[in-house]
Length: 460
Ligand SMILES: *Cc1c(COP(=O)(O)O)cnc(C)c1O
Image (cartoon, rainbow, N blue to C red; front, side):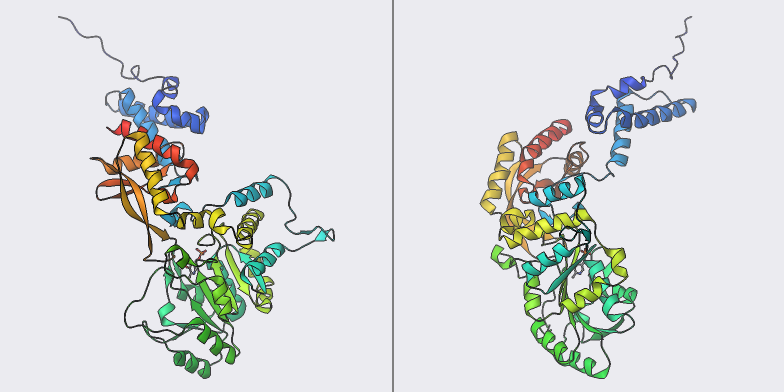
């Protein structure tokens, strides 16, 4: 009669070092450094010991590695990191909207590296004003008298309402009481600003006479016009245009404020897109102030810009709330560099958002084909890219995508997202993975092909 010697399940656990050196963890060790990987390994081993103490068998090496990988992925992927956007959505709010131009990136680094003249007047050798240079640049680019920058467009609208209409009445059409993504609701912003909302017209029809009647009935601080950025009204619809509204407001001595949203400085129809109100058009129409985002169609960093009559801009610049909404030197540096591209008439080439929007379908097809040929995987198919970012809701641009058919498309898409270096976000549709080159920076083309080949090899 013989008894097998008792196996000590604790002894079967691998050493910490053996896990750290395991090839499956190598990419994470390279990306994060060996010290940052260690706590996740210890945690997995502690969990294994606790399980053994409760009578469970010792986990296999593969199980432990999988646990460590999953823990690292789920926790450390939360840290802010650069990703490759292969979704074809140019202004992807979840992916940080606009990528910056080369010059904007360089300006940002330079401002970060050392000291700047942020609030210093170099000519006089004494305290200066933050954002003065930007105001001049904004004026030059848009034709406005003056300009101001705050944290984002939501803050710009808030500052305008608070600064010019607190405890007073603001007129707005019922067709424009919209919600932009991220919980920006015009009625809520009005309420928070302390302004009183006066709605005119109906949800589909608003006439100039509706505005006129409201202006005659009560004192009004300002008329607010909001671009319906992310949806469209079709059918039985009417609304006075901006020039007519501006003329009416002017007759009543009330400022007209236009929130144009995406901040297009170029004409979108030149690129086969529907028209988007440009900042210059809104000013030319007679708006006293125009508010827009820095990181939508302007193609710069997150910011809110206000341009228009000096009198109102200066009133806002001196408002106490301005101190809470002001931007830092990094934003200013990137914004100035972005606006310079428009001044030099080189935005289409240099501002990535416009380079992407103006990319020709045959060029995109050639890039997708190069991915396909480099790997021998998938096919190239026609698709549509979207503008996104609450701009041009129904508009799409013809493109070509690299399409991968697999039994587990979500698994492949996940593998591309959780890779340690440069995660890739692709689209899953019709049971396939789609990669649209329009939103992939050309310098990442080789990385995309390599990553897909690797993920494919691991998955099959
Ligand atoms: C996007 C948008 C906003 C909000 O802009 P943020 O820069 O994201 O704060 C406000 N108004 C309109 C009309 C918009 O399209």
